[in-house]
Amino acid sequence: MPELPEVETTRRGVQSHLEGRALRGAIVRNGSLRWPVPPDLSARLAGETVRAVSRRAKYLLLECDSGTLLIHLGMSGSLRILAADTPAQKHDHIDLLLDGQLLRYRDPRRFGAVLWHIGPIETHPLLQALGPEPLSADFDGATLHQAIGKRGSPIKLALMDNHVVVGVGNIYANESLFYAGIAPTRPASSLSREECERLAAEIKAVLARAIEAGGSTLRDFVDSEGKPGYFQQSYMVYNRQEEPCRQCGTPIRQIRQGQRSTYYCPLCQPC
DNA sequence: CTTTAAACCTGGTCGC
DNA sequence: TGCGACCAGGTTTAAA
Image (tube, rainbow, N blue to C red):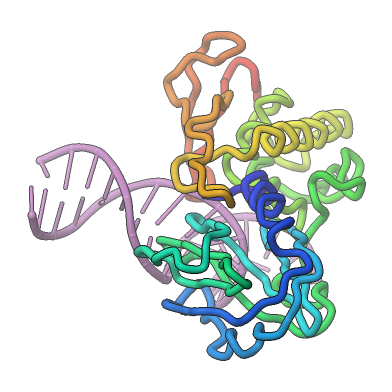
């Protein structure tokens, strides 16, 4: 389940292998992802050169001369650079062909996407309405406070709304609220400016630490070199229901919010 | 227009 | 061994 740190780790892992390289085409074994992979993908990519590998939210962007390849890893996707003759295994749906190598897209649950877009990438429908990047200067306590000012929904759900800030999934919404000492059930509009400052700072800090650690994972993530991702990174609250809080020893509580699991410490995150 | 709730896609895992 | 229930989360759709 790649969250933003895993996507960024993947980007950094494949970047040096792709930038400046020519694409010879693609092999699509199963084009039935979140949206259909373009049937003419191979012809589109043949002869293109990858100029830059960038990221917007959880979308990886392979910027080429005639267009941009958007890659979303969904819940179970991964990218690896492999020798050109590496046999494909189950769930290896797409190969981008390089000279002597390939970029392999694997995605067991096929919640991800591979799309080709011609024109300025910021005009793509999937990227158009996105909020600020959490690690950028465009996101801070002031913008967070402004964005959630009129929201009656719980702060945890507001954090996971891509209009407020992108790339904060379930794991890091839970973790950043713990570090900020804010209960996930608090109405978003009830947060003070100071609490928003704290929360924005903790979101940045926890994401930066995870990227620094090379990405964390539950079980599915494999980095670009094919090494296993970090299993069971030590989270403060995520997936720790009934276990003692690392700060105060109180059992971590699990509740459901918007059909998702929320974890928090009732003592460190008072209502 | 904004905000909120819920359905959808798939495969791995767990309990029986 | 098989089967149903459940879970993961970004996006879309529907509803208010």
